[in-house]
Image (cartoon, rainbow, N blue to C red; front, side):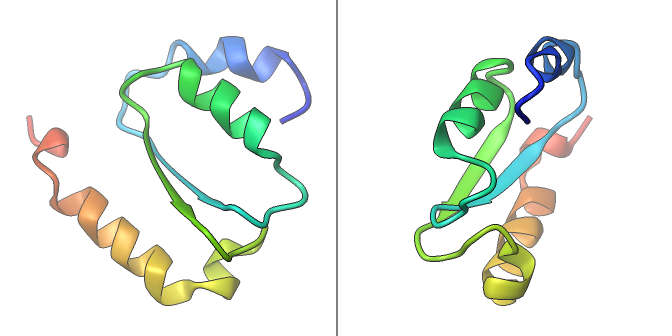
Length: 78
């Protein structure tokens, strides 16, 4: 995420994207997440307040819930 070229590459994504992030993540900083979100207004974002970098291990039930919500939304239809 520290390679600046990634942000330009994200602008061209046309598929739906869900970004999950743990607020205690010490590898991917909040500023990087904000830059990613800024590349495409359609990106969906959810943050867990106590999870770290290994979100799926720290909070597996929350991750599962977010994924279910993502696939249940009308934004994926059509």
